Image (cartoon, rainbow, N blue to C red; front, side):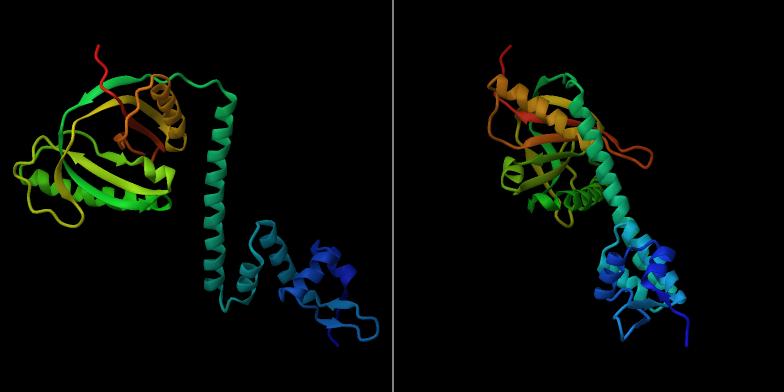
Length: 275
């Protein structure tokens, strides 16, 4: 008869409590090697210690029970490694979110940094534009796809003789944030719409209307851009300047491989101020 261990000895060897062992039995992760027919005590084999250690380590890393079950039943090492790597990616994403949340909370402890605001009259702007009504939850993915497409079309326009007139910009309707669905646009300013080649995909050539803006510049991680929006919105409200219209952003510096810092110019639509 193969050697067995009492649940007490097995618990001591694996650092898993009796409660945990009963739970893993119910969930089909670690069934006892045998159950004593006279007293109903669970008995485990020494060979099960390795699986118990794997379970304990995975659960300590908050791997869901269903995923632990998949890992233990994986047909080969390659499949097991894929499952572990997937959870590692989720942990890394959670860590990034936690670090960003910690930074936000720390900023709440500090007095707000004054934000410089200037008024600017923006002339009608020739541009290549991608417009779409989107859900707020899709904004990040939409921005990545639309900006790549827009840059490709802008390069074609340059080769055809058009001149770029500034950094990539965005137009965001208030409804996008108020209702979590609204109009979004990315645009590449040009000096003129003359010589525009035939455009592909979602990109169109148009002239953006003139506008009056209260402008502030955000410098730092994108996660903290809400602070600059808050300061600019406060300024506009306190001076009773706001008018209907999309917020206009210009992306002066986007994050790169070495830094997540950005430099974004934010323009809030306002009444024309006569000085």
